[in-house]
Length: 120
Image (tube, rainbow, N blue to C red; front, side):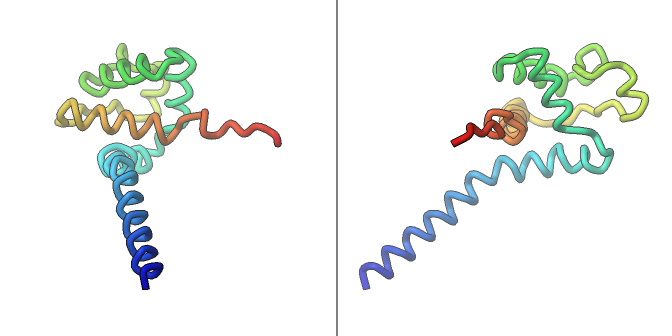
């Protein structure tokens, strides 16, 4: 009987943990990526450009925040021809805390370190 209760408790905790870890990704999806997908904006390309130019997560976050708060071509990492094909982003009326969570979720989702696999 104890094993059954313990099993139910563990599975419940696992489900709650999974929901909590998916929450930032769901918010990112609703706030940002839905529009990116609709406009067919290459998210992974943008991530790679930020990574190549700034290389540290802190600097990437800082520059993304700067662009998202004031979206202009001079604040963008993308070259000018990019904006001939894709629309200029409209500033979202989001609090800094929410923007920061979305940026963290974006960087976490596209993190290249997760894709590195060492041969065994």
